[in-house]
Image 1 (cartoon, rainbow, N blue to C red):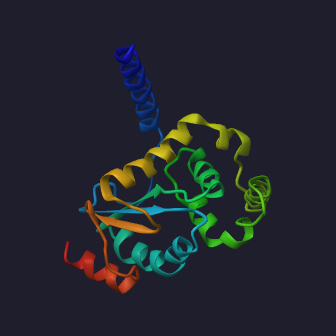
Image 2 (cartoon, rainbow, N blue to C red; image 1 turned 90 degrees about the vertical axis):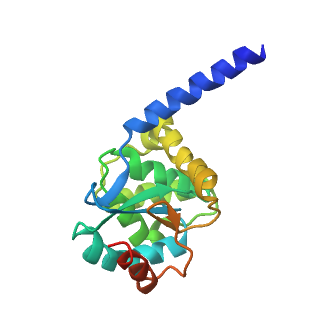
Image 3 (cartoon, rainbow, N blue to C red; image 1 turned 180 degrees about the horizontal axis):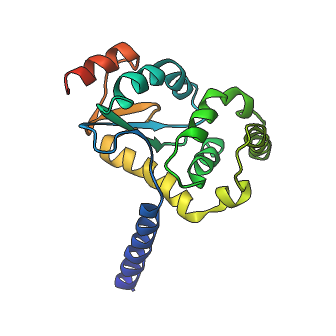
Amino acid sequence: MKKILIIITIFFSTISTISAEEIKRIFVGDKDAKITIIAYESLTCSHCANFHKDVYPELKKNYLDTGLAKIEFRHFPLDIAAFNASKVSQCNNDGDSKILNSLYANQQKWVKGSSIQEANENLKKFLVSEGYNVDFEKCINDKEIEDFVLNDRIDAVKKFKISSTPTIIINDKKFEKTLNYKNLKKALEKLI
């Protein structure tokens, strides 16, 4: 009986891994860049929104747009609202960061509500007001996307011992300094 359970577990974990690989990672920059930055974030995290507002524009201009680095956005949802928003950001499966960036830039417009139903309604209204054409119910109920988002979080804990957001990884090493552009620039310049 134990052997059957182990085989079934391996089979289903392989299926979810295969499905998750078909979903495109949201990234910005040259896919072959020498420097890979991984940003583990939660869409309801105000510090993550601040990273997108205060650090990311300079990072994009000086490192991502120049081909020196690429950034991969990985999901580390801290609550159900962030989990649903993460699924929506992946739903078009185009690897583009427009929805993700918009959710961070306008976080206060949709991150509100005393229940998950209210939070979902605010998220839906926001997406419509911004002109995003996504099937909300389909996105938040898509099991492949759900596995993809959850696997990001599981991998973050297993591989990097991540417990908070945002957490930045540069070429597979956790960035341990205060997350601001000046500190990030110093770390990146050492790798160029």
